[in-house]
Amino acid sequence: MKLWSIIGNSQKLDGGAMFGNAPRAMWERWAPPDEQNRISLACRALLVSPLNGKTVLFETGIGAFFEPKLRERYGVQEPQHVLLDSLRAAGFEHTDIDVVVLSHLHFDHAGGLLAPWREGSAPELLFPNATFVVGARHWQRACKPHSRDRASFIPELPGLLQDSGRLELVEGEHSRALGEAVRFSFSDGHTPGLMLAEVVGPSQVEGQAHGGVAFCADLIPGRFWVHVPITMGYDRCAETLIDEKRAFLEDKLTREVRLFFTHDTDCALARVVCDEKGRFGTEHELAELHARPLTD
Image (cartoon, rainbow, N blue to C red; front, side):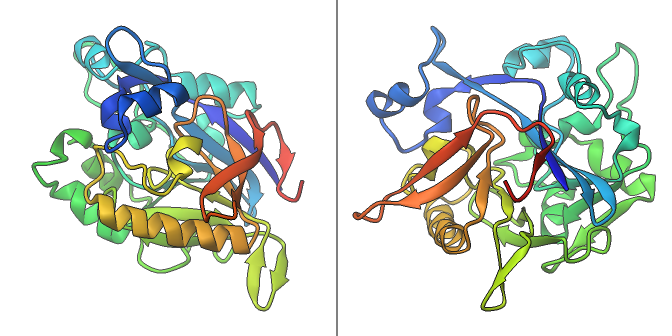
């Protein structure tokens, strides 16, 4: 089993929104803002192959589906579909992907499912051979968004996924597509039913899997959000997210599960640590993964 970090289109978003409850004097040391107060963000996917005998992509980033006006509004930096280029550089095409796992359907995590914008053309779904794995509870949110986060969803996407005939909705720890090779847990602080995927490690200690990799999605967008009190202005419920994050990090620390970050510009994978004061951090940080064995 090998792992690749697959870079998608990058974004610039308001730093105050991304660091919600943290003062600028703190967060600007982590992520220096531009003249518009925006910070740089990656939209990174994780590719694993073979996983349960399949080639699996965890998320697709924001992609290039926005028309130019909206691309500028949401700070998307590149007009081309960077994810497709990155897959090709790793030796894959989108047609090679057997399963796409989506933590949630906000456009910066699922927009890469769509072909690049073309004037006068309707949204078109890519990955024609893939099963799309989505959390069942979050699916309900995506189909009927709340006014608070309606703008975060792509209106046409649920219909395209449903019509593909390749949508699998997950309610428990495992999916039909991936069996016990991937373990799912769920979070509500950022958005209802956000699905957190763990590529299960090879070792067992007291009946628990050790040594895997967890896709942190928007529970922990990058290293700076590992600090438990830091949340985003985009989060649905900050107190819920903080409690979920602490439990998540304690579990991953105990089981030696590494963290994969989607929005961190400089770090794809890291180990979680905790100091004598109980503050979480990271070590052994890797900027990129190129056919890296899970057990390294």
